[in-house]
Length: 210
Image (cartoon, rainbow, N blue to C red; front, side):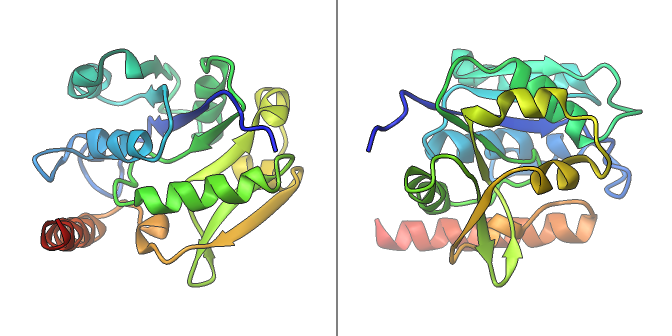
């Protein structure tokens, strides 16, 4: 079975953070920002380069990602206030270099483990024509791994229901994971506190195992 030359990632991070009340991508988390921790998760999961689609507080988000250098590229969604996530995904996909597949991970999901990335990748290697979703406790989560064959369909998609409608037009498979971070996003102050507790627990376990 041929292994693709590389797997990249698209991280849409152009949302308005209405329910959070402030730019959630820039909130502090584990000594860094939420968006930086999300990018770190993708890089640890084997994705490179990572394309981040920015919107609100563009300059500050870009500055927080500058230490990653050429491993991360930023694309600006100038219409972030009027568009949904699909538009940001399309901008990110258009900016990708040639790759066998790419992960899609929202910019407010910093708690996904590298084990989940690997599980999704292994499932895709057995189903290379399909979009792969991780599933935790019956819920589909992220990262989603999308084969190159769907790039043109994503860029041209103009149907209803945004990403949900797009997935209905794709072949999809799911793989079970034991990582709650795969379904843990961050839309409210309460979910932000929950992610901070989750990452604190993960860091403690990693220190105990090392």
